[in-house]
Amino acid sequence: MSDARSVLPTHDVMNQPPVRGDADLWTSDPVLRGCAARVGAHEDDLASYGRIMGSAEMREAGREANRHLPELVTFDRGGRRLDEVRFHPAYHTLMETTQTAGYAAVAWDGRPGGHVTHAGISYMASQIEPGHCCPMTMTYAAVPALSASPEIASIWHPKLTACAYDKATRPVGQKKAATLGMAMTEKQGGSDVRANTTVASKDGDHWRLRGHKWFCSAPMSDGFLTLAQAPGGLTCFLLPRWLEGERNSIHIMRLKDKLGNKSNASSEVEFHDALAWQLGDEGAGVRTIIEMVHHTRLDTALAPAGLMRAALTEAHHWVTHRSTFQRRLIDQPLMRTVLADLTLDWEGALTLAMRVAQAFDSDAPEERAFARISVALAKFLANKRCPVVTFEAMEVLGGMGYVEDTPMPMLYREAPLNGIWEGSGNVICLDILRTLAREPMAADALNAELDAATGTDRRFDAALQTHRDRWPALPPEAEARWFAERTAQLLTASLLLRHAPAEVADAYVATRVAGEGGHVSGSVALGDVSPILDRLMA
Image 1 (cartoon, rainbow, N blue to C red):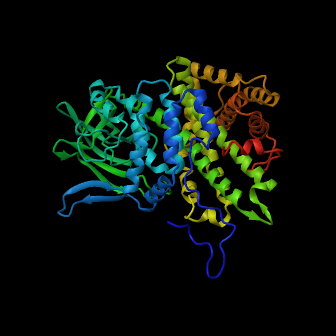
Image 2: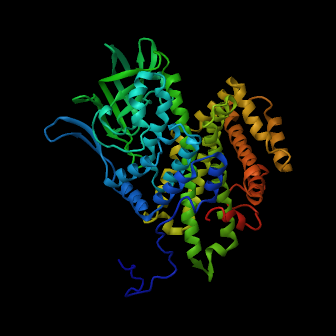
Image 3: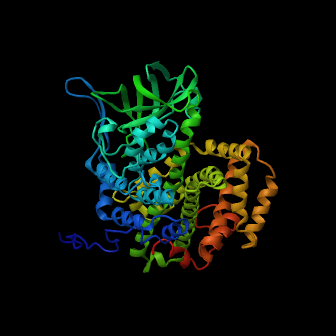
């Protein structure tokens, strides 16, 4: 097909950036490539996925999946209950592509570097279409939780860890691959799951659940992990979506009309004596499902880095191809300063998240402890910066940034999600304090990572000492956000000082650690920002 016409009857189309077309998410991202090499990711796998996912075809699939929203089909034409969600074909294309790449599977295939490879896939997927990541994140995270019941795991593990996608409505034993969702929160409790009222009643070798769930992720999954009150206390259960010869009694009441994440069909559900299998010990529901929550939090730390890069690359494309007042926008000093300052947030978030993923890959006790504390710190800081970065990138495009012809509105709507999902800001900060109080090894591992950069930059050393002088012990609860933000910034700075180019580390320390600048993005003096902007696009 020929190019679109730029000579129109009333005017010529000028000073408009070209359509982006194909873009390789791997080769164009020097920060990702550097992190992947350092932490031992499967670089060939990431290169292959980045090439496919950045194509114009996949970008268009992402647009279509958000333009044509999921539809709930409660009954068939005869009045029989279906409780199914129908998706546009573009959604299934995204799921097929990303599952085949190993999103949910690669961390569990036995090769070293599985979690960091998963992290790279998750990060790139979020740049193109974040909504389809939800069911795959849940599937990835459910695998360790199922280990609480080996008999159940023997059935579900092979399906959850298959590099394939199977949308058929069949029992898990008849499928080549499966996905698993989560249904935990209820209206009256929210994050306080111990207030749940869903009841579990014993029925032979299985259970029957009756109650409601205010949020159920990915309701077309093949099964769900959920919590219910058994006689012995709050217990974790696996609910299969499809039974032999019938549908389980999981009623989808409605789909959530969310701000963003539109392609993902979050829902409210009721269990009408739905069949379920006990997972873990009776009364140990929180302890059983917490492994799933721990792993989902890794993705909530990675996704904002992906969203930030997607927004910044759109902004970079715009300013490279558009001029005002006889100068390209990319050549104007104030624009360069704003973009460079935003780039520091993105590079810091990705560097920290990939280090966290590296800790997930280790069996060493100190690395496991570091994973528990660092994932919360990474999730907190990245998600507080993500809405700011996406908005500022949107503003770079001017009025076009507010128009759905660009991906900026979708990215902006998506930006708050991961800060809320799997523990909002206050919940995460309180978890940080609890982890440090209960697990001395986590505190030791965190301090070791912070100390690894001492002696490199006097401003960093002074800030770290000030931080420790301010809080020689854990802070009071009212200061938990201040403590979490400062700790996460110092941890990011430590990593950048050791692994990033000197210009990037110096600018991050100056602006985020030493406070040399204002509170608005771009209110900084960075000098020559070319080395920082070069990190945004190879």
